[in-house]
Image (cartoon, rainbow, N blue to C red; front, side, top):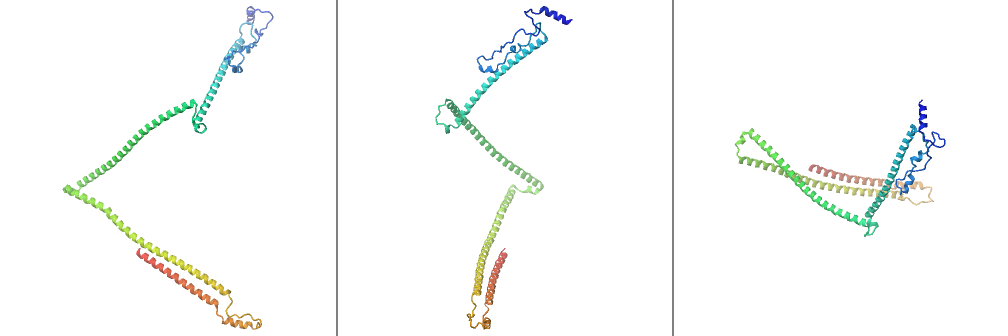
Length: 353
């Protein structure tokens, strides 16, 4: 029943057109219209232009009778898409503006950096005089700031010096206060001790003020004389020690002389021993005394005559051995004498200590 009523209403209120049309046919053909650009004079925006919603949805078939739910959904979709395209165009425009601003700021920053580099290396890469107006203004501004900074530094320095003087005076007063406080404490303790002694010993009350002052002066004099006496005793002890040190130095010097003399004697003994050894070697190598020349005629009786000559010759090795023993005995005697002298000096040193 409902479908019949809808069909009747559509037949009554539907527009009458020539030719046969169906429900899904579109009333208007596709159009290639586009949204107007945000900036007509800006040709860079042509790349970001998008087709309009009318051209996109113009191919969608329209209903011939009333607004169906599908038609309403399509209309809402068209509106949402149109709003999205508008927002996209605005964002593209803002992006372009921000890019232009960023490029401008980058260029300006590069110029400022180059200008600062020129100011820093002005004396190295540029002549002494410059005709750049911005540089001249910058230098003048920097000079003014430098003068102001120097004046401020001088002012602050004067203030700091005054503070330093105040702190020094305060420290000096504080040190004086501590010394006075310590002295006051000592005097109070002394007064308390004297009062306690006065209360403990009533005999002191019978003493007069003059007697007490004399006693105090006497005790102070004795207390002052005690360090002097100790210093005098120390000086006397140092004098005695100095004398002992002088004697020790003399004895040590004598010991060194004796040691040197002993070394010299040892050297001479070694030299004599070497000469003696060399003399023995020469005597061994030399031709023995009393040996007759070789006689070939009496070669048969050579053994008996040579034996008799050898028996009559003195023993040279025995003489050399006796000389060496005498030399060694004399050397031992000298060393014993030197050691005896050392022992005598050491004994004297022990007696002095």
